[in-house]
Length: 456
Image 1: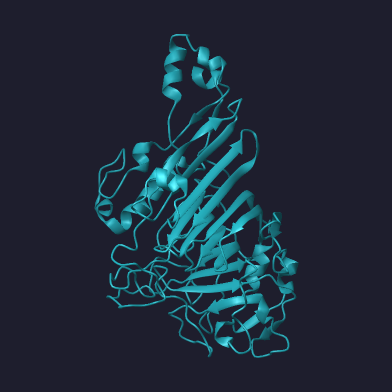
Image 2: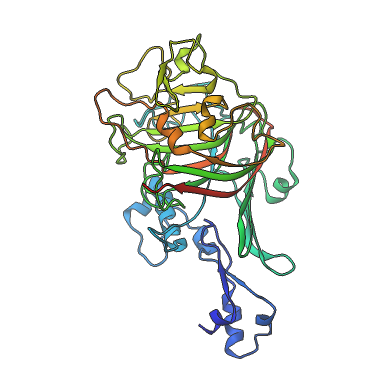
């Protein structure tokens, strides 16, 4: 207790990976009244997650408990570890506690001969060659290497928090080759910075594709603090202590796009993830009937509308305007085709309106439905960009988006005659998906990220 009075403590629990623990040395100094260092350091940094915690792997028991059957299941261990780390990072708050920001790394590589991924939630065998998915051969679905610069107090007055992790999917890399930026090596980096007592966290992201890994994704996510998150069929942890629900929430953040990631970078100004069944009921973990629902706005000006009168299969069946009126996609004089990049139905939908396209059946544990939109005047009332190039390179902005109202107006599939689903968005994120384009680099910063839930 004397230590806590002597040295105000700054904790960084919202970072998923918080590392070194420096308090013990100072505690010993306080005991023998020789703490000259205490007069020099205004703060100490307490890390709730140790290096041992970070390195826990399949089969290792979690500290403080015995190993159980679930920990011996390779498919469940990562999910259990997230809950364990969430318990260590949890901060009590009203109306519920929160844990940490989530950074998502994904690769689009898929070995179609390995039979690793279910198809619309169903186990399938090898499907043979498929040019839709890049793969250089056996092992192409590997997890990336990760290196970690522990969060520390920096600056002349030791009042700046800064940490980083970085790595590569190319397993013959090392920290030196990654930091040098060797050509044709995949790369990612996320750096977080904050001044004590002022401002917000600033997250700096870099993502580079390579010949072997041409389809990569990097997102900063605010996930639900309990229950499922977008794209997951098991409980997760996060920052959203209240799950935002359409139409009653807004999202505010500052985005600075420094490098765009090339013409095939689907940079998402806003990406929302939810889950409900086609009968409108909430998801329960049954991957054959649960459906992940995504809505994404792409702000890369190179992204064009695939939805047009000659390609109705990638248009939603109808569009709802902000005043509540709607128009069918066949009404060519009124339907805003250029407001949509694409729409695809979930693979387990039973009542499809032809022509139609089905979403990729392998990229999620369960079927998925995707609505991708582009800057257009119809989204202006919700605070979204109305013209290509707004918010892009050289145009950093602070956005306040009426995500709740917009997401309420979008078309999502349900079986006829079923009650409307509650559109609760367990994941709110932004970042980029560089789609099958090697040797491209995206770089951006995000700060002042807030989800504003409106009183009802």
